[in-house]
Length: 106
Image (cartoon, rainbow, N blue to C red; front, side, top):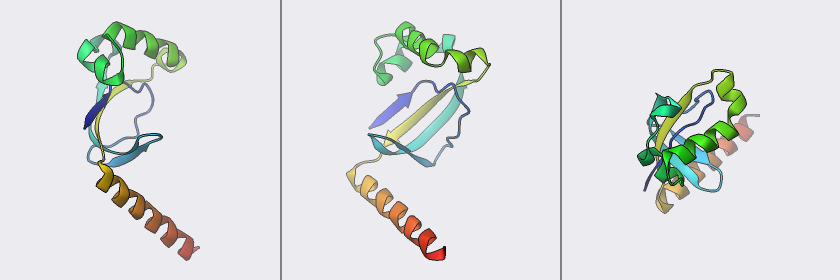
């Protein structure tokens, strides 16, 4: 399953070919991260994020991130793939092992 988060107008801390966690969804594999201007967003960007149109998406982003956009922060299009059940389990086990190892060193 592949998703797109059309824009995150924040300092982008995601890197391609890395994994991250989305609360409520789980682990994802980041496939691409690119700067995008809000007026360049299309309906094809909006639909995967649950919006009927680019106009609706732009309106929501303008409302949610008004301060950040006014401060000149950049927006990013992030494409990612949600881990399947097997990958989720492996990632959780790896994270637990890392936490356990860190506690042992303390």
